[in-house]
Image 1 (cartoon, rainbow, N blue to C red):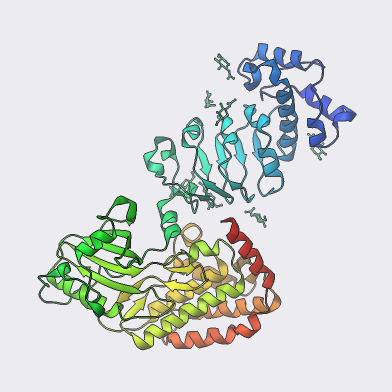
Image 2: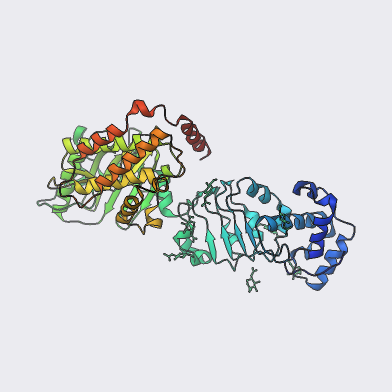
Length: 521
Ligand SMILES: *[C@@H]1O[C@H](CO)[C@@H](O)[C@H](O)[C@H]1NC(C)=O
Ligand SMILES: *[C@@H]1O[C@H](CO)[C@@H](O)[C@H](O)[C@H]1NC(C)=O
Ligand SMILES: *[C@@H]1O[C@H](CO)[C@@H](O)[C@H](O)[C@H]1NC(C)=O
Ligand SMILES: *[C@@H]1O[C@H](CO)[C@@H](O)[C@H](O)[C@H]1NC(C)=O
Ligand SMILES: *[C@@H]1O[C@H](CO)[C@@H](O)[C@H](O)[C@H]1NC(C)=O
Ligand SMILES: *[C@@H]1O[C@H](CO)[C@@H](O)[C@H](O)[C@H]1NC(C)=O
Ligand SMILES: *[C@@H]1O[C@H](CO)[C@@H](O)[C@H](O)[C@H]1NC(C)=O
């Protein structure tokens, strides 16, 4: 066998030809891996190293000969599998996109990664449902320029220190994974070169983490103005019976002195804590610090007095407030769950999506009738789903004058269309709701299949329901008509489309799929 130096750090073309032409080795990959190296293998690689000492295997001991041999076999197969040109001499990329069976197999060949050929510039392992911790062995290919691990189910932490060895990495995609890490890409100099689009829904961005705990509510710490005098006693007054008023002292105690451990969200003017009340109830406490005018405080209390009275199983329960001079707080019930945005990533079945839409519109209808001064801001990020698949609306606003609900209906329309299409407005429509709506309107007749979330396999009945629901969504978002529908009318229309008795029989097996997915999360 002739020996030539291959720039790839693999062995030689002739060696690869030997692999292919040797009848014993033309068997499947695993069989080939069980063969011992050919007798002249050591002299082949020794020779290669004499010509180019930078090859990855040159510093290894001879006892690793078998692994080096095996790594060349895997490299040859992987190169071919990736349709790289001129395999394996210029093996420049690993393409294992959407190969959920093959990707884990190739990842398991640790000997291959250890001797990762220097010629490889880019690695794509996206869309493979890879679960578990970050596959660190990839990082042995320190020379790569591009790495895509998006659309997997990787969890845990990023091996940040090993990452920083990839000095030439210019493209990274870790989006759509389930990492659980406080990660501030801007604070680690290596990661500064990447923007948020490398980490969308990865569990690494702060916004992902917020949803993980529970959706946070921004009720009304930024309310409008009326007039009058401040309550001089402020938060010092203890909560009395039905008065729902908390003292600063109570809240301090509930949050262990506003400790960092209990802080779950911090924005410019607002902090959210998970607190435990004296009676053991776990609550969410939203705090705004700083002095405000007395009118502001008065109006704040007035609104809180309204909100604590609202009781509906699909609307977040406001338990009370605190209106100190230096600090205002809203205390809310705390529910476990995920935002609709995150829920949709688990591909819930059609039946469950319709249930959520129905319950949300019914809650809106309840508000319109009982509390016309309260508006809710329905969005996939402002509604959560609890363990029992019950939706909960988290954002409410009190208006001075009950006005037209057209904006609310528009928002619900977008929400409904999102439940069906599961598109990411931020990434796909530059965050524009109207672009999203226009896109749906444009495709609703000829390309309905493009609109409906591809992860949802619909029966004929469900498909027809989805078609009608899209129409309703478009009616809600049609701003051209003068006469807007009422929340109640929308609710009745949806009820006609979604008849629970009919739906029950639809797509039962998808329900199972969903439950299975939940177990893995
Ligand atoms: C092999 O070892 C030498 C000296 O220890 C080092 O300079 C060289 O970079 C190493 N080569 C590789 C490919 O690791
Ligand atoms: C790659 O594999 C295909 C089919 O498995 C085979 O036909 C082809 O010859 C291989 N290419 C190389 C360069 O070995
Ligand atoms: C991801 O994989 C699924 C099947 O596992 C496939 O239907 C889908 O088209 C893939 N998506 C992309 C972007 O390749
Ligand atoms: C491979 O990576 C691991 C961890 O990332 C590291 O400990 C090891 O030294 C690397 N091996 C080689 C041969 O580069
Ligand atoms: C990055 O690229 C430069 C220039 O091509 C090269 O000299 C260097 O070795 C590369 N770094 C790594 C870690 O491979
Ligand atoms: C983020 O980075 C990607 C690729 O690195 C680039 O295409 C995109 O335009 C960047 N986005 C922003 C908002 O800078
Ligand atoms: C990462 O992948 C996601 C989903 O495919 C895509 O939306 C995003 O733009 C990609 N980011 C980069 C930096 O390529």
